[in-house]
Length: 61
Image 1 (cartoon, rainbow, N blue to C red):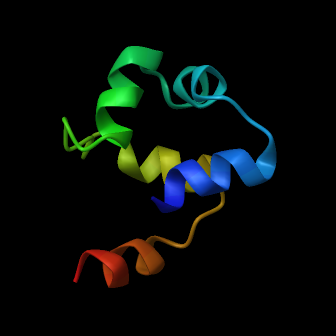
Image 2 (cartoon, rainbow, N blue to C red; image 1 turned 90 degrees about the vertical axis):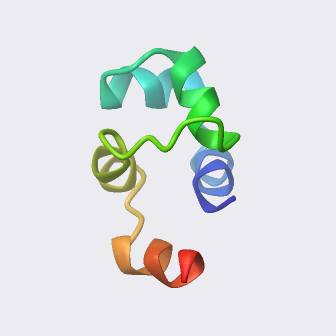
């Protein structure tokens, strides 16, 4: 998944990302594994990791 790859590329942990987007690392893990949609957090996740939202839309299409 693009988000996990970007996390690794930037050298950040899921705990770091969870803190920056305002959720728990458990809930973020659910999002990353597709167990929760994460719609509320997705814009902030993309912004924090500097991911173009259109690139995510293209993958989902």
